[in-house]
Amino acid sequence: MPPRLNRILFVFEFPPSEAEWQLRDLAAGLQARRPGLAISYCTGFAARYSPGGLHPLRIVNGFWVHLRAIGQILLGRYDAVLVRSAPPLIQMTVALACRLRGLPYWIWLMDAHPEIEQVLCQGKPVIAWVLGALCRLNRRGLRRAQLVVVLDQAMRRRLVPSVGADRVIVCPTWGREGLAKIKVPEQIETGEGSALRLVYLGNFGLAHDLPLLCRLLEACAARRKVELVFIGTAARSIEPFKGFAAQHGIAVSLRPHVAFSELPAFLPAMKFDYGIVTLNERFLGLLSPSKFIGYLAGGLPVIYLGPADTNAALVCDELGAGLRIGAGSFDSALGRDAIERIFNRESRRQMTQRVPNALAHFDRYNGEYLAGEIAKCTGLAN
Image (cartoon, rainbow, N blue to C red; front, side, top):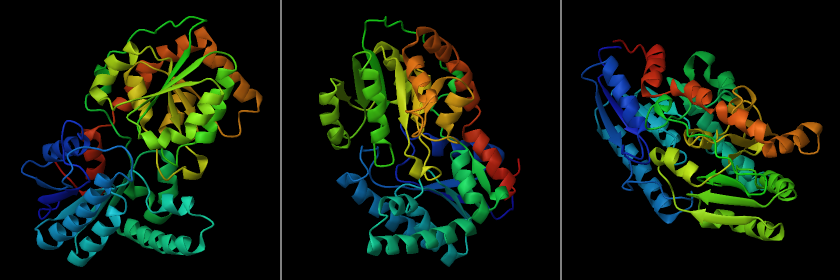
């Protein structure tokens, strides 16, 4: 590591804590490679996540992070800046401030804003023009970054042409504890006559495929009673879904957020059959659903409704710990076979048995791994 790179600033919406461990893990990994490396934080005043991107606290907290980042970068003494892309557009603010100071910066891209909004606002000329200009500025900032961290192969494929293959690192998000240490609970036998119990963890936004989820539930409800539990989801996000659920006799309930460390005990106790992951194809490469890790930690196989090249698709297509149904598959033999497998006890048993191997695959991704990949791009030495 160059001698002058002794102080790094981490910019993110929330401070390191028991609930936000990934920056903390990365800091430990970097400091293990360079003892004495000083790491400072630029975060908001909110200590924890509030469900819903438009929650008033999230909005005010986000504006504060933007303002604070400008002040700290321009007035502080740092040799490099790492920005994790929350709140939205913070990587653009950091890129501008770092350019004014002549500092190298690293972008950890969780969700691709403003490209996500650009997809959502297609057909609205004035807004589309503004977002197009923001996207061009964002691409310029990404090209000038010393490195960019993304979550899956689809995100990498989107960025490589403009950023360069040697500067894009793929590292999925990781759990607070090593995944290999998690004891996967034994499979829960629900019986042929019992309800199919499904769980959905976390945010359900516009990038998640509600029509595809409805098609899945309709097909399942035609065969057996279905219960769907949302956990840690904003209540307003599932309001449009309630009418459909009532029409098809699907029992829907909402429960508060459950910490990742509690999922290995909580999910089996709730006797769920599968965990649901969704992604609208229009957002492939712009974000990467990570809910699958929570389900695997609780011993659940995954039902993934979305395109290939995501980590959830890898869990289903390559690691066999779930099944994937794409948007165009429902009316095909592939889609009908997937529905059959959901209710087939032997198929579910096999998927559940593959959960530990899927966890082992993702266990190698952690703060130490990411620190090592950053070292390759920046010259960080032991």
